[in-house]
Image (cartoon, rainbow, N blue to C red; front, side):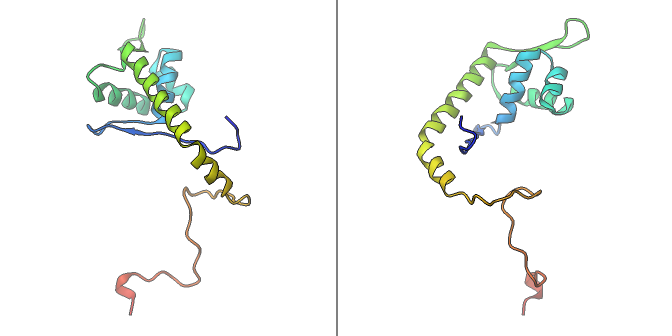
Length: 141
């Protein structure tokens, strides 16, 4: 992918309230690689507790588990189930198809960017600063 191109990130929100985000897919990939929740935590930079909660949420979201876990110090760990492998494949398919469908719109949005834009510490666009203090409803005449 061109480093100058806009990137499309997909979050899939399921009807039962579960979600599958790029962060989830990165964590799934890490568990697949290192076969450990603690190892995945270290690789992704996400806390062990958050990794464990993400794994638990994904396992509860579907009728088939995404991960098989093997607690304990000896022989312990975690691995992706066949359904987990299919979940990742389907998620990546959605991303590829969405990116292909949005290619022209993303190029137009990228072309419209302000080349002098500098991100601030806060997220999102910020409102212009005012010289006057903000007046709430109760303070308006």
